[in-house]
Amino acid sequence: MNANTDLPGGGPDQDPVPAQRNWMPAGCYRCEFPNLKRPLDSANHFGVAADGEQLGIMRIPVRWLARDEAINLAAWLVVVADPERKEFERLFSEIKKS
Image 1 (cartoon, rainbow, N blue to C red):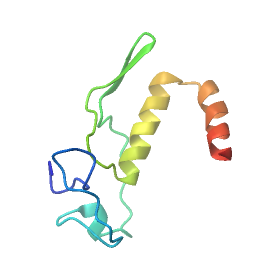
Image 2: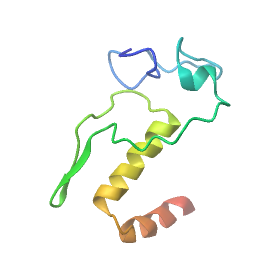
Image 3: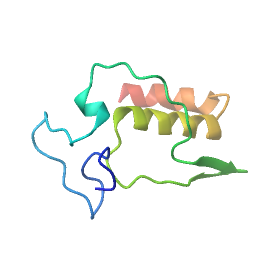
Image 4: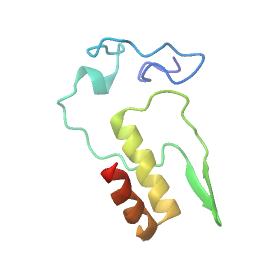
């Protein structure tokens, strides 16, 4: 584990995902207080950037992402890759159908 807030799994140096659903790592703020409303965090934690038509993720996570981290990464990718969301909305609608 890289930090006590990392979720398990996702890489060769990390623990496998536990089978039980109520597992929580010690010190995990998201796990210990699941009903506590946290402020929206829109920081670019994964370093999403673009250079012309190419996108880069400077900090590629090699672990399981928490739900809020996955949404943050997805939002940054969409904002950088398709700011008007023209292609994204069309593809999002198709993915929701599947």
